[in-house]
Length: 118
Image 1 (cartoon, rainbow, N blue to C red):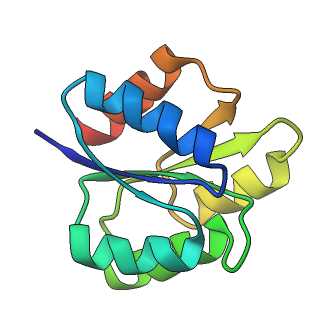
Image 2 (image 1 turned 90 degrees about the vertical axis):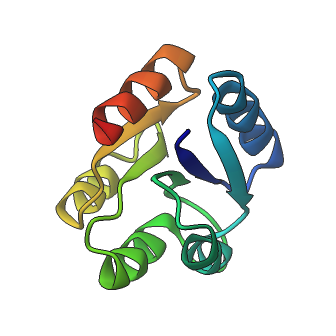
C-alpha cells in the first residue's frame, strides 16, 4: 500500500486526514511544519504528500521547493485555505501536482491522491 505524509501545523487537520487515509488502507506519517516535513520525507520516502501552504518555521512553498530539490519526482498536493490563490499558483509552478481547498471534501482528497499516484 502507498505511503502518504500529511503536513499541517493544525493537529486536528493532521488527525482528520490520517484517519481518512488510514481508513482507505494507506500507511500515513505526519509532520507539523515544513522543516519537519523535509526531514520526515527523507526518512519515510512517501509516495505522496498532502501539505499545508501556511505553516510556521518553514511554509509549504519552501518545503515543496526543498523536497523537489532532492527529489524532482516528489508527488506533493498542497492544502490551502480559500483566498490563497496566488500561493497555489506559485506552488503549482514550483512542482506541486494538485491542491485541495480546506475545509476539504474527503472525496476531493482521495481523487487528488488517486490522480498523482496513478
